[in-house]
Image 1 (cartoon, one colour):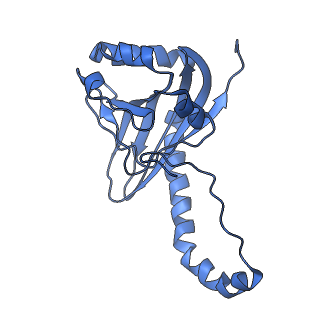
Image 2 (cartoon, one colour; image 1 turned 180 degrees about the vertical axis):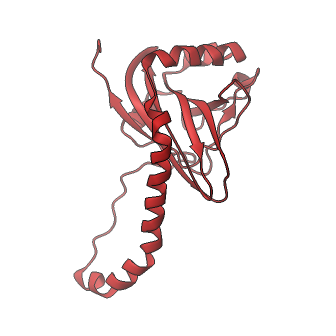
Length: 208
């Protein structure tokens, strides 16, 4: 059963009979042509954002965490109590008509780095200009963190982020063991739309 705010990937389609495939081949090709073009445009948007996403080093993370704690001292307890979290120092977002976001981050469990993650998002509707912000995803439970590691975390229309303010920690609420906080570059309040965000996870070897 799919839970609000999280979509688990991996669903399988029912088998298609050969006769069905023959009858629907031409309409399928025509009807999905616009979607293929959309996919190309989405790839282009994310490609434009990738230079920002690539500019990441492990040393970029501690200053971001300190900024979050400095803005709201209550965040220190959120970090301490979380089973794990992933820090994206910079998420680049922008586009006209078709928008996208991309960022690279580091994953923590028990206060120690265990891997890397890439955030991707494609959004539709009118947009103009772009934003850059930092995002931290907190995991309240071991199960939520494990789902993230398996690549099963995707934010649906029920997901929302809390903008970093002096009382963000008091407003923070977990949904299915996951909570999101964002901060615009420069420390401004920014509640980014996280709908459609997906994440990859790549474990790193101990001592690397």
